[in-house]
Amino acid sequence: MEHALTLFVRSIFVDNMIFAFFLGMCSYLAVSKNVKTSIGLGIAVTFVLLITLPVNYLLETKVLSKGALSWLGDGFADLDLSYLSFILFIAVIAAIVQLVEMVVEKFSPSLYASLGIFLPLIAVNCAIMGGALFMQQRVGLEPTDPKALTNMLDVVAYALGSGIGWALAIVGLASIRERLEYSDVPAPLKGLGITFITVGLMAMAFLCFSGLEI
Image 1 (cartoon, rainbow, N blue to C red):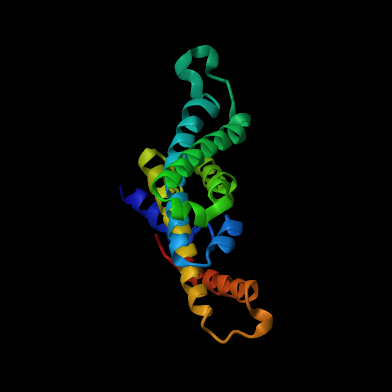
Image 2 (cartoon, rainbow, N blue to C red; image 1 turned 90 degrees about the vertical axis):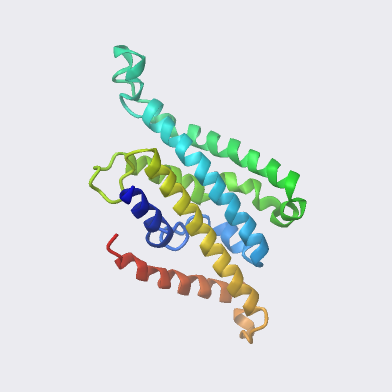
């Protein structure tokens, strides 16, 4: 339980998908113009990570990795299907995103209209695929490694923390951008110029968490 809590905190602050790895930047910059829309997208990304990472973890440990199919018999003990990981991970992500899109359209048409094309584009959001690939790397780490994913609880904690970290980043930027609308920003820096500077400063601020002993 302590290891899962450590993974959860690390994935929010230390290994933040936006500020540590710059994953999902396209939708992060495009949708972060107002807080309401950013919260909706942040929840959607968190939900997709929370569902897809455990499913992909089961695929990795029970089907894809070398020897994972040994439960089918001795003839499958040396079978390695890891070369299929990309296509299967993407298929799982696309299926879950399609489900999220239908749910949002059904229960919140205004949010669906606000997110526009960026809702189905969660399927190709680098943060989602990055989470799956990081999970694949961390499964093979030694159990004593603080980043290791050793069981389903660890994977859920990592997925939830990664989603919350991404949501925290986009909501934080949206809040700042709303305030900047009423600020005296120099003309050459208006729009994406001041946004890039703000993101850089936020990333530098999050670097302070890298020194945490967790």
